[in-house]
Amino acid sequence: MMRVAFTAAARAVRRPGGGARVGVAMLSMVGALAAAAAGLAQSAAPPAPDLGGFVEIPGGPFTMGAGPSRTLEAFDNERWSPTSEAGTVDVPTFYLARREVTVGEFAAFAHATGWSADPRALAAAADLPVVFVGWTDAVRYARWLSTALAAAPSTPAEVRRLLAAGWRVALPTEAQWEKAARGTDGRLYPWGDRLRRDRAVFEAAAPRAAGAVACPECAHGLTDMAGNVWEWTRSPYQPYPYDEADDRGGLEADALWVMRGGGFADPARLVRTTARGAAEPGARRPFIGVRVALVPPSAR
Image 1 (cartoon, rainbow, N blue to C red):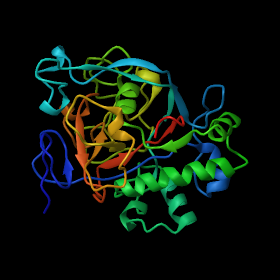
Image 2 (tube, rainbow, N blue to C red):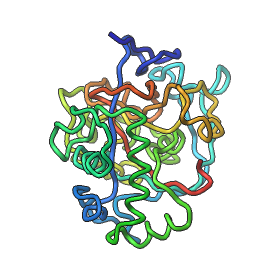
Image 3 (cartoon, rainbow, N blue to C red):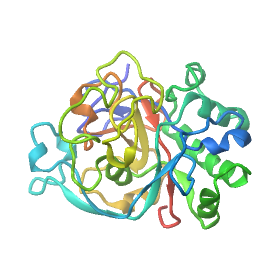
Image 4 (cartoon, rainbow, N blue to C red):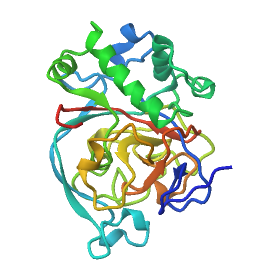
């Protein structure tokens, strides 16, 4: 049986406030790949230019971490330092998937590549967020999607242009994820500062279909940035202050990788925009998922 801890380095899964190790899951983002990927579902019609389910997150600074007004809810690992509880991070423009990767989308990848997926990852309904995928599964999926999108005739022209210019599909960094979730106004939840049970799946018995819970007030209109399933990032777990240099190398090393957003069974405290969890790369559990990003060449 694995242990869970959210404020000290552990060797499996760490959710803030937890006590026994666990972890797991992942997302897609491009409906336009359906023909080439033999199963990737068409996303809801995106705004022009057509980005096939990706949403632009404008570049610029934002406040990262739990600020003074969040101290009662925040865990120690969300605080920038003993003297400064939040920091400012400048994140260049990138694109984030509007929803989490589904079982059907991950199955298309597994069938196309022969990837040895956990059978439980492919057993649920096709529109549910995929779970029982480890960090290594999520990274491999993102790499495959980059290649598949570049080759598919149905890929939106703007996505094709970005890929030709050196952009790639990847897991978002921890900073990218938090900026997309909270916008630039430092909100406590993706939709604002007041808890709402109609905008996220938490304290529930099971996840819902990816993107099923609309959130028009959420930053950038993204869905499931709180609850449903935790989402892998490509950032290794480190104490704050955040340093993007930690995300650029050693991604194959044995480490704990940050996961964000909280899951369907978690309390409200864990679905805040600043809550952090972490898991070892091989952790495959029923409550961790993934959302992919389209990132510029400089984001390595």
